[in-house]
Length: 347
Length: 132
Image 1 (cartoon, chains in turn blue, purple):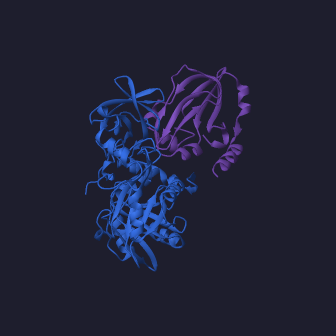
Image 2 (spheres, one colour):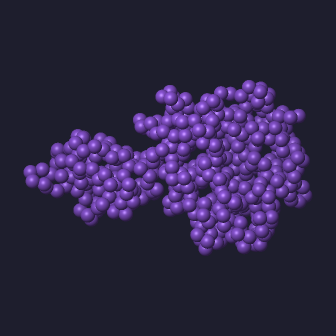
Image 3 (cartoon, helix red, strand yellow):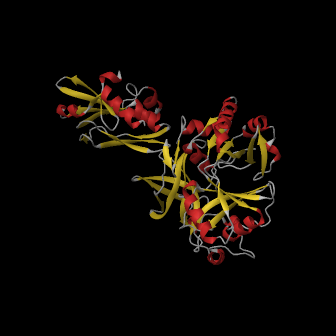
């Protein structure tokens, strides 16, 4: 168990690699209750979110989930978030899911930018479980009495799971198909146990923070505090699709408008290395003997069985096929720049 | 080898010393507890035969998906043998840490350093405390 943003969480239940493989081949269960959940109500809530999010979500309809960023006045990334438009009486509400380590910062930021609009921090009263992998929809269908295949990718719905109000979304952070469930904290333990039993029946298991990291890395997904920070703008990170500048403003939008025309020099890139040594955060990236960038995340990919890493280098060196070296504690491991993601599921 | 017959360093290496003619030879490896804590081993960096080590000096590293850890020599001496097959058989560190998973053998330079190492029971107590 480790301390993570004030939460005590397992790096692994058994083995990172076993949990990783179970998620790729069957199903992995992730207790992601540490993620922050903030609820905004009605059209006023949507209007407020529109004033702080980089993404234009004004056309979001109930049942849709959107990925967005929150930027500071300089266009640096404060957090990457999901916005759920959840239908419910008497009107639509919007759930903002933020990174655990950023929750206090984002709550303060939102309070500083709101007029009279209230939002409710539901993080402590709710739980969040990710069910990910090729067998995920099948076990959920049996448990929920609802076929999650009816949801589109990044779709969501509210349902009654044996008396427990549950928000189900077809989202995840592993590169696999699957869902994330948000439910009252009081019901979380019994529902988690039901999921663990159903997962075990098809070769799945609970997975910890370690596997969550190796899975998202293979899927080429950035992680706040590593690929994303206040020193990185959305264009460097390759997240321009989450920025909507037309007919709207938000903190940093003027800076981002100029960056859209004249992007900064660095780009996020991915590398596959030779050998077995693991490139880790902070290691230097070399091109033709010169240091050109740095690793922000790295691991030994259980699927590729090769060391992989993401990081930042000058844009002209981020092209797939570029040969680089990474300094692994004094040893230069050769590698090649590849197109992200490292892993794409077959179906 | 039985762990009960070994000495342990705080840094989770084990030692078994036996006489070889006029010399004392120490076989060194890492404990089952350490291997379990690392899990998912991917790489081991082994030293060269002939290298002189001081007690507490790093002689290699073992790397897992999660982290990289230095290997520290519990005793001073010259490396006389290295278990080269470990490079391709990391599973032996896990499956047989006190046997086929040995890492190096040293010609012991100073037997008195053994007094700084722990018997198994004391080492287990340390592990129990670290486990929490």
